[in-house]
Length: 361
Ligand code: ASP
Ligand code: CP
Image 1 (spheres, helix red, strand yellow):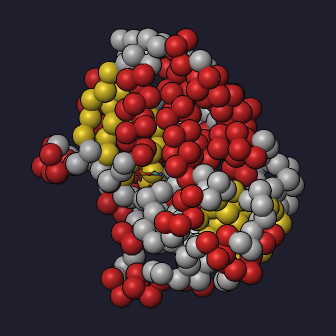
Image 2 (image 1 turned 30 degrees about the vertical axis):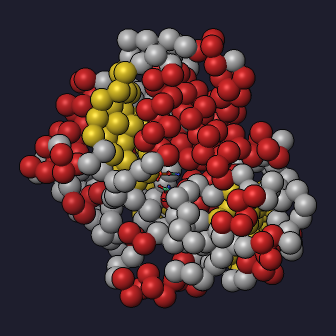
Image 3 (image 1 turned 90 degrees about the vertical axis):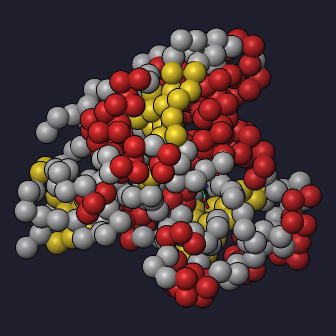
């Protein structure tokens, strides 16, 4: 299989932990000394291919590149591009990567950005692939934790809401499991629990986690509360969404039960899971968190374009031509020309695009 030579960021695992720390260190310096970085990417172009809506990720990436002196091209509505004529991800990426030095892509299907990276002629950054992963949000979250809690270790972190479809939750849980002595409280309904492959990852790194259904009961023990939106666009039917919305709501009364130094994070957008009264609580950090996102993306763009990142192979598994991933939201279900690549864990195959598992017969 053709392995790409570029430092793509599809999953944070693509970069070593030391690199995550370097990126967040550099973001802190950029925030403190922005004048030093003006023009650092002059003459470079970033292509933003957004097949799904975005406010923060797209705008902070664009602001980041403009502040570094670079230019931007791209689309934020595929209906206005030749995607609407039926062009594949492979072809769109091939073309856009010929015009750009770095591509940032968001797409509703899981594994889609990895598929795009296969044919790209420049580095590709995953800005969210369906309900799967969102690594640049995680870099933002790691920077927020370092800046506001002073550490990435020894924290009890509660994740609340849609833990099944929340890609920011998956990426952040995986990342925090790489640091010492973190504990997790996973607060959700039965239907919206964290996927098994993420829980296995926590167990494999000896991280303690508990599952809970009451925010009120869990909140007193937390150092960090990571609230999330119920991901309406990922549900099979409006009825299923109706049953899940409004279940969790953080308000002033619940904040009274929390530690004095607990911080509240949220990747945003918020719908109604945090009431507006919480915004004035100094522990509510979600707007500040979104602002950190721009600095972390400046740092990421610089690191990628300066080739400061060691490249790992995009795929580690093997091609199984006759095996099909069973996840209907996996990119392989809609782009049949993609090779079927799986990691084999003792007879359990894990799809390299979306992490769905199946038993080898
Ligand atoms: N903005 C985040 C994402 O794109 C969280 C959300 O949409 O709820 O995953
Ligand atoms: N946090 C985040 O990804 O926000 P957007 O969906 O607005 O980009």
